[in-house]
Length: 180
Image (tube, rainbow, N blue to C red):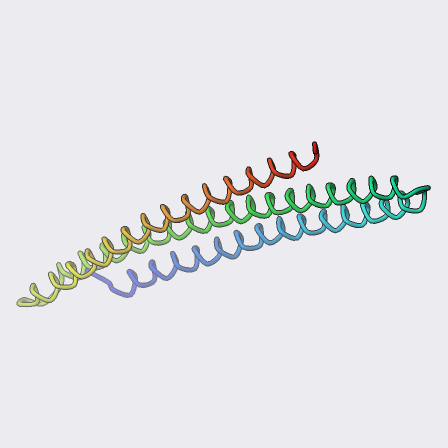
């Protein structure tokens, strides 16, 4: 016999499991971001100390100009490296969250489809039209979500390619500026 309470309980347990995975993934990604920022601050402090010591030992204007250029290049390299790492962490987090969302949606789809199937078998006579309408609506919303998901993946891939191309261009420009 069909027991709706058990079906809803199973769906709720899947929801709780997804929430725990989301919390764990969020904490993991936050730890990575915090570590990146701690390392960036350490590097900035070390460079400030090095720059101050170098500035204190400058003896003429030419040395000062060379030091200024050297410090500016180091700053650009650090900012570019930080931005690149931040982007990689963001991309990794986005991929993890997308995978979790896809997994949760698939589990939800499976659970609802199972629930509808079991409920339709124990539905009263004459309710076939309502059950079929619900099945049709669920199938249409599933198809719409799948299309939305595909479109989102395409946009993310395009944005990723654009950001990587811009980073490569910026790195080349910084390298050329160094040589000049």
